[in-house]
Image (cartoon, rainbow, N blue to C red; front, top):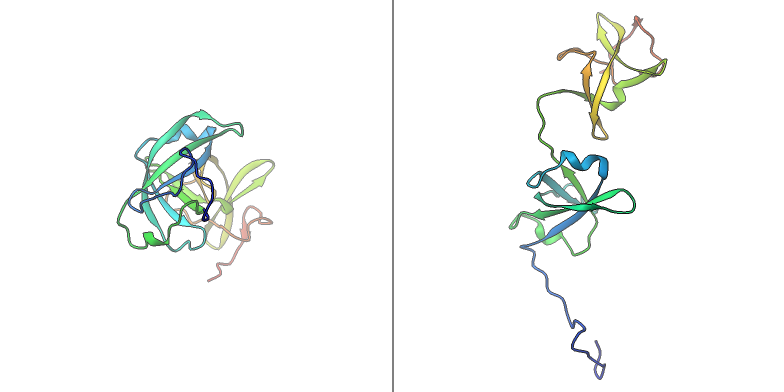
Length: 174
């Protein structure tokens, strides 16, 4: 606004915000929304500084699916956290959402390879690689749930496994 500018009663002159009541809007695919519940915990990190994390909780799940097949979520950042002065209005953030689940066997996604269009994980035993056909479940981008084919405690091969064959001799790199 400048001196002598026309002002209307319906136009805002300024905006106020409180760092005590910050919220974040995020979107998830509609296929994922049924795993979520109000109250789910999440960490919020500014894209400019991923080392800073703020605790938050899911406060709203929009019941309408957007045109792109996405559902809007709202998170409330818990107030009075150290570093909250680093958050600015309309800042881009990363949301890490925690979904409580029962105990399950989870491995890094890179451990999965395809053999004859079937998912295989190589296990390591006595300096040899053995393939295990697996049935997978949910995944989160970096990890994947194993429903069948592996047992807890089995050593698995997670790198240099693309060209590996069954019963091949392998060496553990440290």
